[in-house]
Image 1: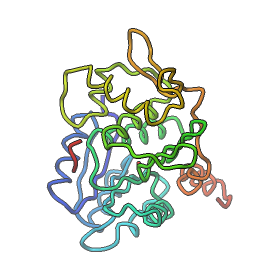
Image 2 (image 1 turned 120 degrees about the vertical axis):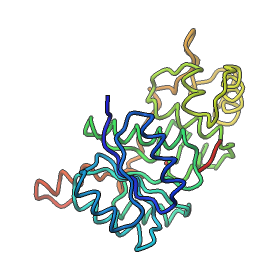
Image 3 (image 1 turned 30 degrees about the horizontal axis):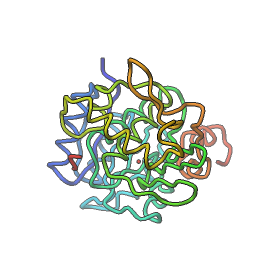
Length: 259
């Protein structure tokens, strides 16, 4: 079953091919472009569900194309950029991006973000760029975590694990599912998940021996406590483009192996 049509506008031919291959393996139809002009032409031809857009293109600024795509009101936009500063993320979101992923990034996280965007497109929702869980705040755009207002250091693997659990929105994930989604390479040892969950709990749980954020689901695996998930409206405000597009139509003013 084809899940949707995705247009990749990426200047790096190796990265472009790699992303395209993984998306095709995940049952998406994929088109590829290397320049701003090719991206516009391909958009008109295919009317894709989602555009994966490089912020630096050889014939222009990717943010310019992002703004143009946003005005078309048809496709979601995932912006890829080597710039990770807060102002860069804000510029990207204000240029029309629905999500922002900094390079280098793990392939599993990339695929998870694509899946989340497409899923919320089908449901008519929006993608949160930040989540709050009581005193824990997860910034998906800048890959940062705060506990009681203080930033805590997570390894890339710990963040990917936390991200995948949070994106599951309270649904339990088995150890094999977590290995597939959160780990960049094929690993068969489920104890690897247990070890990383234990390490993660020590950093984010108020009482790691009685975890409340990452819960154990007997005979299944783990889940992010659904009762504690809250979308941060401040982070959604610049990215709430689906609602903005609906408002315009109604004549209203309106975030391992690395690649």
